[in-house]
Length: 201
Image: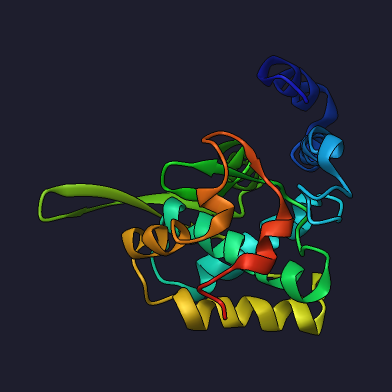
């Protein structure tokens, strides 16, 4: 991946096209970072694709008002795992890890940061009754052409089932899953646990 100093140097020499080209390098670098789990039980037997992952993120940010990071992580988990349970492959190819608030895309901070760097995502701050919290807004349009009809239907079903729940309620639901209960904190979760999902039956 390109360092900030390298990016500045590149921009100084590349002129008007400097903003686009480094983003492609960043995307390639992140895709390579996930190569070790590609086509394994930890990726849902798919290859990770940052562009497809980013667009699933954009879909949920568009469809669910003021979606928080915790809630977004769970929406992604339930979508990928339900699709895997029905089709034996995941949609995004992203591995998920077990963390205290539930399953999350592995290295999600890096992934969301890359989407923000591409100017497709923005994190907003809200203050409600003295409590400060953050949520995502989108600055780009969701590209439905990257997904099959089956994939889009699963994404829509996730919004229907869980879009109205808050982050705490969705985290609590994810704690009922064997995917979370049977793994240690920080460990990757096998997609084979998708067959045991309780909240999607």
